[in-house]
Length: 318
Image (cartoon, rainbow, N blue to C red; front, side):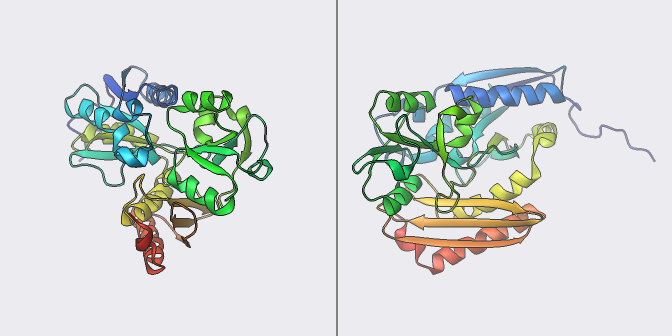
């Protein structure tokens, strides 16, 4: 007996979708990129962007690790999903909490941009060139720890604000150099500002860095179906392993924690570290396996996390 081609209790294509987004230039680029992808898939769909300011955008005078961490950039967007003002929210995946709150799901992971960290300076071409006492800005404890370990002669200072704000602080001379995610600079057409890409060893990125995550309510089976074509399987598997490492180690902004997956054929290799903020203590672990499913990826991430814990990583966690 032939089945009706659309047995789902919702239309094959959406008529209207609203994307919740932060209002920074990078966040709006991400939302517009998602809108363009959705329009390509569903030409007759009306796709709108609901711009919002989050607590993370408002609190700029303190380090993220001291004011509540990753959830600061997500909460207002989730409220818009919950009350029906928006159907989906797009985030930099590294800003998304490792455990999704009840009622919400990470429904789609889009293909990854460059995951590396970037060295940005107006006067110097590398970290090695920086004179003794130079001020380097970073928003992340992970970067701070690895910089302190390798360059104790530099002053590492917090750097908050959106990408344009951070670049402005550099251009005003408040910092001799800043470290940013390469992905954001490339997405905004600022790749020419990058003086050097920091190698994955030792500058291992944060879990999910360079990837975009799409969040919906977990009961929206229609959204899961409509977004399925945008899921990038290699990225999804890599970030599933990375986020499992981070989840096991209480991954938040208060922990100097790195986890990054790289593909070599069908083998996924994960490199991870947990460090003390001053960079004097560090636990490193890596592993590789043939990965075909999210369950495989999470098992790999779990094994790396267990290796770190066996080395005493829990002593470095706050």
